[in-house]
Structure formats: structure tokens, C-alpha cells
Length: 260
Picture 1 (cartoon, rainbow, N blue to C red):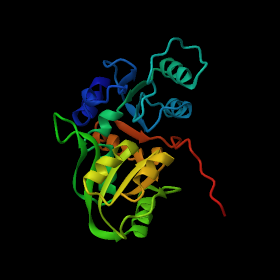
Picture 2: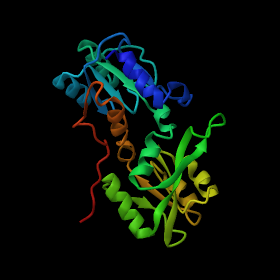
Picture 3: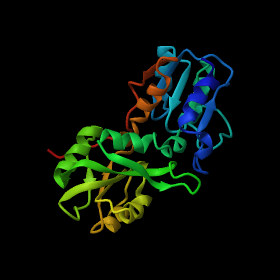
Picture 4: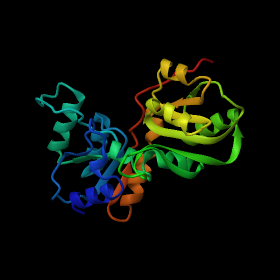
């Protein structure tokens, strides 16, 4: 397939125009008119992921997080980003990222998290003014209410999370769930206003959780862990059209040592 054809498939679900103003979704490295035979899927573009693409003979890396958030003033190999760009160009590997454009799609990151948790009646938590089916975060209903401790175990099991941080439950039973993949602490007030019993996201700071305490059960997991289902979305969109493989080296940069 042409690279542009792959981009068109991704953007049929997550149009680049709907990304946040600060974001840099889209083509990072490459030319849309080149042929692509094999695509490597990852959350992050790191040096190890680029090396994996080279080793596996992949023509393209399709990631959730952009390699480039800001323009490079030089490519000297002084930073990981510069080295990734240089290696990608040297080995003719295209890089495309679908970040907040995929975050804001109902069938995107948060929607997939909700589906994996078994939520029903899923809708956008913070819809855009133009389209209620586009926006950040989602809210839905558990098919059967769960005790809060069972809910935490369910979250940990579904996402394979090493840890779950949480504020005390406001009530013992969880039924209405709001969530946002990645760093979504800013939407805690929206979850409260929507009547959610719990709000699941990542990268919550101490004061975010302190403010939530007593109003909603805030649940925090690792950022990468919350978004690794992005690769499943990419794979489903491209499977049967081009060879796809999910990175075996892409992983959260955060490691946790648990007390024995």
C-alpha cells in the first residue's frame, strides 16, 4: 500500500484535524507516495523501537505518541529524538503518529478502554462543541454494579497494571464509570458533574487526587498501560491490507518496585 493510503485509513477514524492545538499528530518522517509493506505498531517511538523496525524489515512505524512535539533545529545525534529521526531516514522508515486525534475519537483510546472494561452505553465525557461524538474521555455503565475493591481488581486485571492508585470510594458500589486514556486529571470535575462513581485515568498528581477525594473515587494507572490498546486499534484497521506487527520492545519507561 502507499503510505498515504494507510494514513487515510487511520484518519477515517481519527482525522488529524481534530487533534488538540498543542499536539503534533500526523506524518513525522517519510513521503506519502512511497510503498509500505510492513508496519510496526507502538505507543512510543524510541530508539529501541526504531532498532526493532530496522531488524524486522518494517517500512513504517505507526505510533500513538508523536516522536516530534517540537521542531528540531539540528540533527546531530545529541538527543534520542534526533537519533530516531536520523536512523529512520537512513533506513527509509516512515513514521506516523495518531495522538489526540485518536484520543478524541469515540472508537479511539478511551472508547477502547471502556469496551475492555465491559462498559455499556458509552458516550464522550467532554464532547467538542461541533460534534458530540468527538471529544476527550468517555463515560459508561457497568453491566452489573461492582464493589469498589472488586472494581480496582478488575481495572488491574484488564490493563495488566503493576499498580493502581486511588482515593477512597465515596460509596461502596461502582456502577457509572468515567475514564480518559493518558493524562486526564483535568477532567475529574467533568466526571463528577456527569454523576460518575469513579474516574480512571493516568498521571494524576497529589493535588488532583486530593481535590477529588470525598467527591469521586479517582483511580490512577500508568500512562503507557492506559494507552497500549491503541496498537490493537491500529492493527484492526490495517490487518488484511498490509503486514502489521506489534512492537515487542515498546513498554512503559516507568518501573515500580513494590514492597515485599
